[in-house]
Image (cartoon, rainbow, N blue to C red; front, side, top):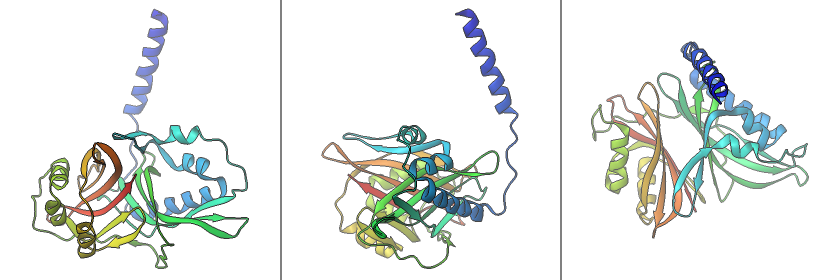
Length: 286
């Protein structure tokens, strides 16, 4: 046992030493177009290889999956669940096809998000068998490549006809609420406690994706839609902050009558005044 422990400790020290001297990739002035190109390559690979192998090839080792349980929402390792799936039969019968429409990256070019339409296309029937909107969070790896950290999707009642080419999401308007030095966790708690506070943090060009509803764009449209919906009790379970401190991803769960009702992912971006603004939100009900 002593020898085993000694060998394990020596191996751990060696791995740690290698990790400690790993040189980070240099800054990339083309971070956004490179992330978009990676998304397109991801989609092309998945169309040929199927979801299991396509996702395994482009997911980061620390990628997470949102698990919506009866009483809570938790995060698990996404690649473990993918690897457990059986190998797909080739050629792929039902292709998953998607295209990035808009998104953003942090100012340091290390984390970003993308969204756009997707369809499931049956090769034999030559017909669409499902449609929706996807949302992905990407992280730049130490070697400079981009890999998916989170992938979410909602179903839509009809195909999202996004015919325009990719455009970077607008930067958030300055806003007047909040201060430049606020931690995003504090701001998140405030908007979870008060819908009015949430509304004041919406960016002018905010996007809201909700299962079964076509994408809603713009502060006025999002506010009007939210006013017609029942309130739910939501709790943040994880937040991911860019090293530059100007972009954050918050994941949480919502419940009603003590039972989990679904999850949400919210993207926060600092405005030119340093205030946190909501630029994107996707919700998945149970």
